[in-house]
Length: 255
Length: 255
DNA sequence: TCGTCAAACTTGTACATACATGTGGTCATC
DNA sequence: GATGACCACATGTATGTACAAGTTTGACGA
Image 1 (tube, rainbow over the protein chains, first blue to last red):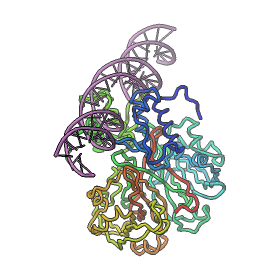
Image 2: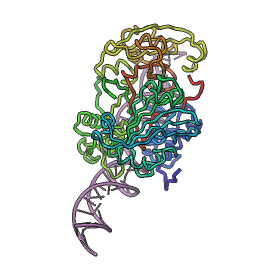
Image 3: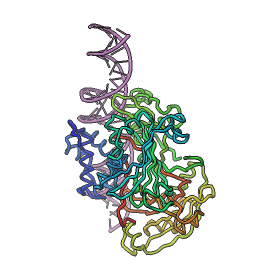
Image 4: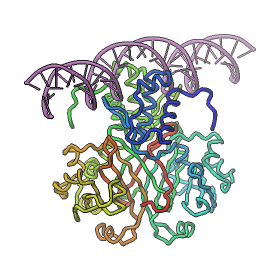
């Protein structure tokens, strides 16, 4: 990992607690050290300690409240932004060898619905990628990626069979700051079915993702379809904490 | 809603900003007032202002950074804990009339896999509910709920055709503090298909939920299956912010 | 005109303090 | 033994201050 010059205190405290929980030093149900103890342990003030706690709280690792001691919740998986946006990165963390088999990469004018989803005028050039992704050489997911030309340039210049497009974009200085995902289920169409080696109509977990810059510009619009027995989404929510997700009723005509 | 005696400052600030954003007073891409301006506007100190900002940030509404002004991101849906756990509540917020058609409610000894998922010994009594849920009288979702007896008592004493079990449990003083959801896709089985009026094998969005008390005890284990064209999940993640979700590779034998 | 640099912002981090508010245990009282 | 008042301690909220580390702006000079 990239060595930081001097780690922020709240970051160090959060890292310590996270690690201690993951490694079982604090078991689910156990009480965490009180804020006062942590300030002593890290020779810090209450601010950084509370900031670290807040982080773990929104990660779903702990629960706290007025008067109560902070307790460790059941160990639940959470992943960083980078882990969850990059299939390759995600596989590496799970000790799985990621693979990819590019079907095609093209530059083309955006037809209507794609233009709308990328919020560009009809017919503006886009770069589209269609890949089969593998886990340990086993077909797992098909991904359809679409980029506006300015970002897509980097994709065209990249060997899409060589690994993570996401990592390449980062290396090229593309600023990816936020993503919004919509998850539903869909039956495999003929393309999906052939690549994933399942019958047409097999239920797939569909994740449509849109990625934005910190300025709010749309960078990517993608459609990933997973074999549901190979991958699933998990998320945690805690009462009183802000949530970053929603169950939305799909109205007609929503592509 | 329940009237609060005196609203907390950070809460009031967050509410103001949230409302102003939702109502379009601040458009996506716009800069929010600086912290200094907000402290003046609310006659507050920086603490509450920053706390409110932090809340909106984890909700995915805004983005900020050193030196940069805070900007409004694209309007994205997020829902509170209560909205997302209760189908009835969720429908109400979307101006949809929720309905339910109970198939059965039984008390029975837990068979092996159910006992494991509720973390109780094999054969311990559980209360199970099987309902078809409707939106504006149209079949939308089938839900299978399982409760350990202590909680299930309240369910047995409740007319499950009359509305929200969740609300009833809250009213009975059951402490529901956290949930963990796993989302994947599955084909409709015969029961699902008959109730939802679709062919067997139709792809459904499956949401398996486990609910916990603040002490970490398991209260509920459920399996909801949505018609994917009626509902979908949306979630936002921002780089550098903690995430509460994970994409997990499903290993064999995981029910 | 154009580049440079410094000043004036911005948000992030940290410390010290005070009080609010809820939990849990002690201990005297009934 | 049960009850209830009380106290110690927990986390939540709020204020004030200071500095760190980016971004923007504009004055100034080449």
